[in-house]
Image (cartoon, rainbow, N blue to C red; front, side, top):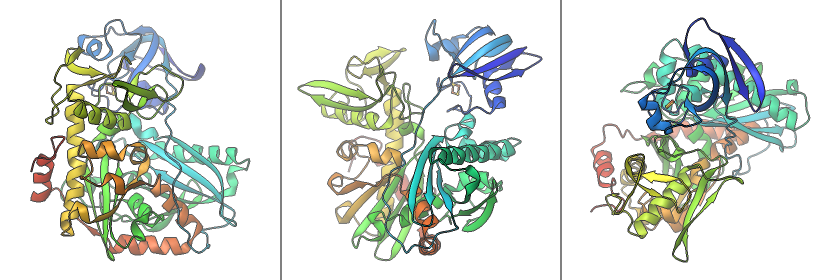
Length: 505
Ligand code: FES
């Protein structure tokens, strides 16, 4: 049987199979960028596709996730049983590509044109520079094609331990090649001219890219086969991989620390937090830097939230109250069909302020959505369920417990904090005031919070443009201390204390 894969009305490719096959397998085989947030376990309901032709009937489990008579099918639960056409959405996810960069002496890593890349678990951000005069020529971003193996780092590590290791490596390697070609295209230059790159990311993403063994990242005690800080050949480009600090505080945090974010300049106690599926953070007290990483889970990136979505068209990105009414804004000129992390935080803060939920997170007068207690965001058709609130509570408790643990490691309290720096896409879009209301950041810190954009990408750019920045990244990563949270009683206590929206003392 033949299965046609169609994206944006274009027939991308046709694959042939002898026997019934799951659509998720077909998508993986096709190499098309597509996300399976729960790794195809049939629990998240996010792998929706449109399909015509011969396919299996939807069972009760699938109907529960998509609704009765849905026009969509879940790729990980639907089998092609004969010829069919599979329509994949053009996901249009973009990474935050702005940021701050301090000045280092100009001494580039290479000649001509070079690329700085930040490989995130969800998105990849790329910048193209004319190295001679530090001119930014173009910017591009794309969804990490490894999303087909799951939304979080753990699922990628698990996939990399088995037979899929080479496929994961090839996916990101090909993604980089195409991304750099796109960057060059935007700048009107030949892609062969880009001969140099600096590629940063978390330790798992970079280890997979380099084809290294990730066994040490899969179980405690966690270890890293290679701490990087080396030059390799990737797709024919001379590529520098910055040094990581620990197995779970990667080169991306090293880059964020040297990017010019205030943390390195600030005389006072300052804290850098990058909220992703892992909350990676670093505190600086005097000359000392201490880092940690906590598993927040992907709730704030939309996964595990019933109508959660990344920052794409149709996603509610802001929720507020105006003249007694709940208002919301949507990305793009589209009807709302999901909610992204920034709006989830707004909603939780608003529900709490309006006493629609109590401090334990319990919805007081719920409506029912898919059999669950829920609150609809105004009349948007987008609901936040009780289960979503519980997932968000776990995520925020982990991040807050990480912040409290770093403060505790310095013998400091939140009042001592001169600056709280939020790095990364999510951190740049959240409201610090609402983050403070739900207890994601400590009381009184919203007014001392600044967002610095894609600090990791800016740090990679600094290294590309200056050997001084490269040397600083080496020294910073080698000297930074790591705080182990998995065995920390303080972290566990703080995690439990912070489950509620207002910390219990
Ligand atoms: S339900 Fe298919 S990937 Fe989650």
